[in-house]
Image (tube, rainbow, N blue to C red; front, side, top):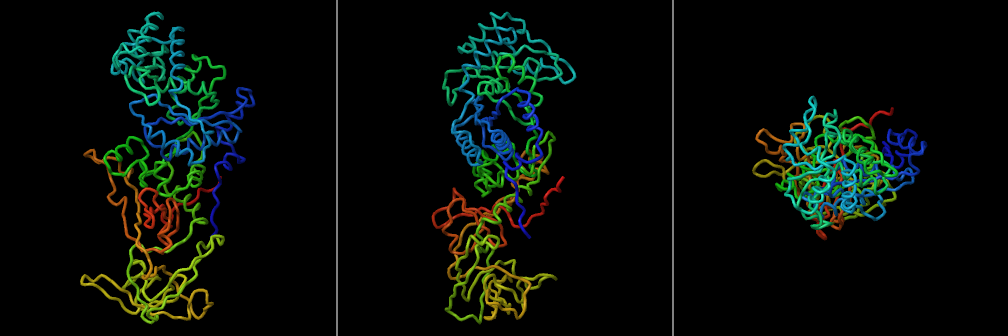
Length: 565
């Protein structure tokens, strides 16, 4: 069966059918609102990115590329209490790895703190912002509910002069954290709670990664973000649906700031995956409790974790394309992501033999001391990958599951009296087995037919089963990690006692016996281990001559491509 070719991001964006974002941009350009397209990806550096962020990165970059525009990478570093340079470095690496070209220049919200302050002063002078004395709890209480309007802040009617003085004193460090805030004067009775005099600035005596101790007031995200977009000349601010209710505030700030070419916010549905953990706070808990070995643990769907496990940028792009761009929130199958990496690696990954649960096989009628070389193709679907020599002798190892003493019907592998093909080698027939004192099979004895050598043209009879093997004389023991979901979110992230609902079998380390060539694997080298799945050499734990392999995905899939519309 031929493999299904998955379109690239660029091909999807340049297809005949346009998504609603492209249609909106087309209208904006036709009506003369903009003469170019400028997008951005604006992460907060408070954790590592996950698969959902990949959609935002690729969408923003893909749109800019499609329209011959510009794409910015900008950090919304307005909350220094949660930000780390480690997160900044990881995000930059992730964006580069996904292939989103941001021109080598990285932008920071903190670059614009002076301009944000001046815009806040401008808004105060217009009479559209005021300094509040209310605490955070009091502001929440005054805000009202979805059915009841809010109450006016006692500081709402301060004079412009008094507000300017208090805001300057906030900036100069005269007030404690939480003692004062700057609020927009909009509408305490608005049906949109985000418009009920939202906070623009808060007092926070924190040292910032870039600005040091220059500032002890910091802008709120909803105030800072539209200003950053306006300063950078962003035309289309593409964000996820949870910001839809914030769009009136975005537009309010843009209008108050008086940008000559105001940016436009457009929202799209997030990318959700079933049965995985994506929330930063959940991942942070797993990291801090040492349940995983870092934000790039291969069991996580952080971009760094997916990369370490062995996923490729093209497979993630294909998955994002498959998920599509819409306004409707939906959940995607993890199996679809696995499908994409299988399709990507099927024609490119060399196929090698590795035995994960070995049991010895002895060919009693094969000459003792004899060793021969056999020819093995590196990928049956890609002849350009060539072939390799593998050694064969009297003693081998096979997978324990490839032998049964009392097999069920339609079991075509090895059992007493049955004949199978050893891959790239000969037909062998099981004659008897040895067992230990517990009854466990320790050695399988066979005979072989020398006329049945692979490639010899033998047509005398056929066998229904083919099994893989490694040569006992020169196979090498290597660590292979087998993964399952770390948490079953369908049962809830937390148990009743508040503990995380962990899968105790999320990682199983086994000592696999492998072809000698696999010992030379370098970090991020990917292979198909015949019948066991696709594996990648771990960049962190592998050592020269002793790689550690992460199983990216098994070979079996229950995923079906969605029907064409």
